[in-house]
Image 1 (cartoon, rainbow, N blue to C red):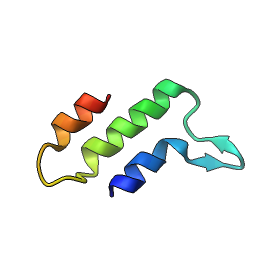
Image 2: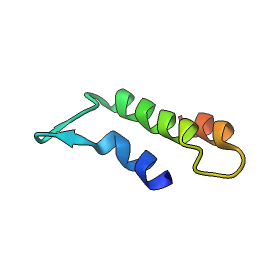
Image 3: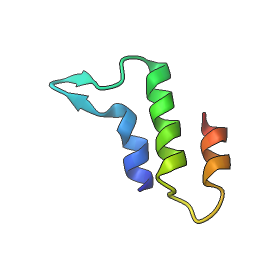
Image 4: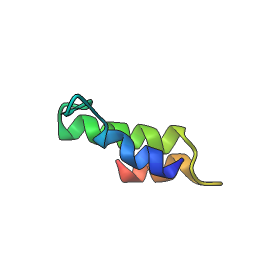
Length: 51
């Protein structure tokens, strides 16, 4: 789950990034870390800290 959250911002379709700019990529990373719950405890704190 952690790996998919980290790779989500770099996702592409036909060679173009799905997230248009760096801020959208950062938001996708934060969203993935917060919602996928890759850790046993501290998911929201870690996701908020990473953003």
